[in-house]
Amino acid sequence: MTGPSRRRRLLILSICCMSLLIVGLDNTIVNVALPAIGRDLHAEVSGMQWTIDAYVLTLASFLLLSGSTADRVGRRRVFQIGLVVFAAGSLLCGLAPSTGWLVAFRVLQAIGGSMLNPVAMSIITNTFTEPRERARAIGVWGAVVGISMALGPVVGGALVGSADWRAIFWINVPVALAALVLTALFVPESRAPRPRRVDPVGQLLVIVTLGSLTYGIIEAPGLGLRSPLIAGAFVLAAAALAGLLAYESRRRDPLIDLRFFRSVPFSGASAIALCVFAGFGGFLFLNTLYLQEVRGLSPLAAGLCTLPIAAMTVAFAPLSGRLVADRGARVPLVVAGLGIAAGGLMLTRLTTSTSLPWLLAGYAVFGLGFGMANAPITNTAVSGMPRTQAGVAAAIASTGRQVGQSLGVAVAGSVLASGVAGPLSADFPRASRAGWWIVAAYGAVVLVLGLLTTGRWARDTAARTAARLTADDTRTPVPR
Image (cartoon, rainbow, N blue to C red; front, side, top):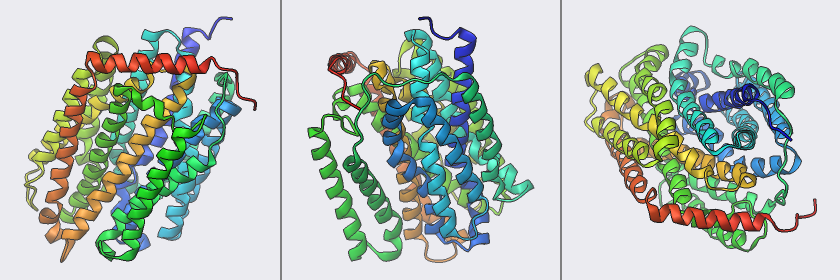
């Protein structure tokens, strides 16, 4: 049986990228609206952190479950359900009367979003079966990841400045509905030949690990590290993680297949995703507060100031995808690490009167690094894996992105809150200095991992891991 035509394949790719665009935008579009949300809903710094982290934490917690569920019940079906839930959550976020309700609706929105990205990646990898064409399609996908997230502050600034912060959520609704109709018309249904069993224990342990760790980081500045509640949160996170690793290693169909991590490139891609997006999350969070609370810029002006990040991402993300397809992941990852580290270092001496050209140059350098990172992360995570495992592999890489961004915001906000003794506008430059050094450290880790995980030895581990996974996929199918 022949597959879809080239035109149909490109249309399917475009539909999948539409879903990625709105989910990616919502990772960052809220940043520029945080001061307006804080004023309107009377939210403190921790409340603003939770507005972002509730979304990315929920995404991280449910990506793997959504990917495996789609393999079982049908990728198109789960994708469509995700679009409906995401649209409903977006509509409700725009109607939220308080910070608590906004955080709750962000959770609903993210549950829908978790059904989109890994499922769309699985649809793409099963639509583009020729390796080189698939690499280019994944390159486009990785580019859209970076572009959507980099455009978030610009789009958010324009919407908040011209309308209201609630418009940043309502804009998702027509896009999601259009993607829903196009999916019904053009995307074929597909399932894995051997779907994985549901793993409720593993899912619960993932949620407990991520939730308690992030809670401890965000609330520590206010309650203190010696608080029994904070200490308990960190102990619970460690215990849940230990339990997760022990439980998943013994399960036949685990939520997180630990065998994937025998592949050095895959493990490296997951760690790099975490560091890149931790740097990105912290960078945007600090800059949003700096530009609006310290420099007194409007949301639109603050969003436009971050335009160099978006412009460099738009320019270099497609180039990164082509480099990965033609020459491998090493060069893009090295450039990514250098750009992120340099962008963070350029802002370590930030003051209330730092020149605008220097700020924009720092944003451009950081945008170069961020734009080069996404294509090699996605391609390395998926390439070499059996097609039947592509959705799970992509979900793990996406989980690394979301966990990274969540922790990046939590760490940056906590470091900032710990250093603020008086008005934020006066204390910010001094209080944020450690945050910029942390961003630079993320970039240095990306550089080192990019060099270590792209050599011949690393590729050999990936080949051996793929061979084992392929052999396991030939087992007798598990009864549904």
